[in-house]
Image 1: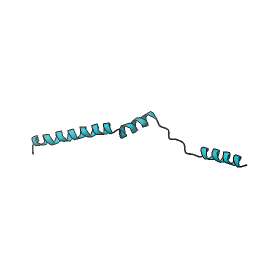
Image 2: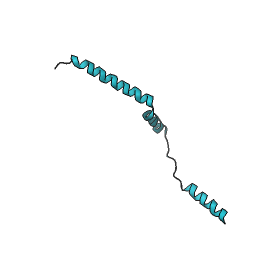
Image 3: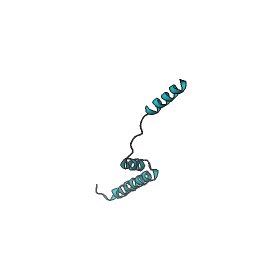
Image 4: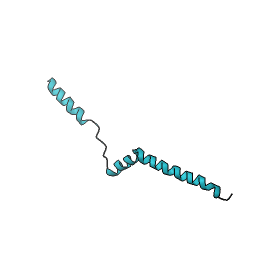
Length: 63
């Protein structure tokens, strides 16, 4: 009797668990691009260079 109850409890717990979320290629690629530190650093470096270029050319603009 205990064996049957244990088997039924095990089956009930395994079926009641949450399903995994579907991961599409686009979602995986987006996730990788958002969390890749090298890509983030390259984007920030490009932004910093653009800001430096703007700051450097501001002296040539008329006032």
